[in-house]
Image 1 (tube, one colour):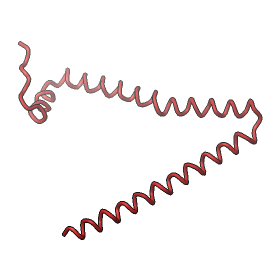
Image 2 (image 1 turned 60 degrees about the horizontal axis):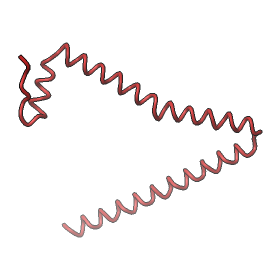
Image 3 (image 1 turned 45 degrees about the vertical axis):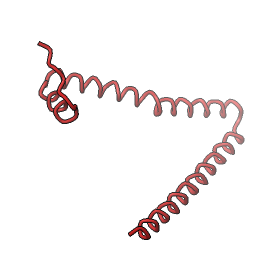
Image 4 (image 1 turned 120 degrees about the vertical axis):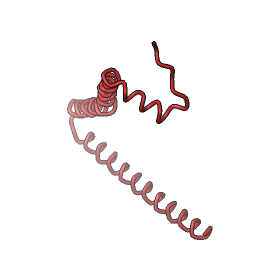
Amino acid sequence: TDKAKSARRKGLAIRRSGFLFFAAIYDLACLIYIYLFIANTREGDGTQWMLATFWWLLQDGLFKPLALAAILGNVSSLALYFFPDIEREVEEKWCQAPLPKPA
């Protein structure tokens, strides 16, 4: 019924808001811990620590996903080259009209 759906949506909204609130509190606590850690180190150590964190984030957030995408793209291209039946199956399943085959 509509009342049950409304109550369920309200409950989910409350749970979602609670999760986001506690996640924000956790993030804030982590930031405070990091800033206090940096404040209690020498300037050179703090700079090295920040650079190490930056490179780690750059590797995990950019380099590794790009490398994985390149590897998977090459593997899928090779699979389509060596097994053309896969391409036909994908076209039949996902394309509205099959693409014409080159002669």
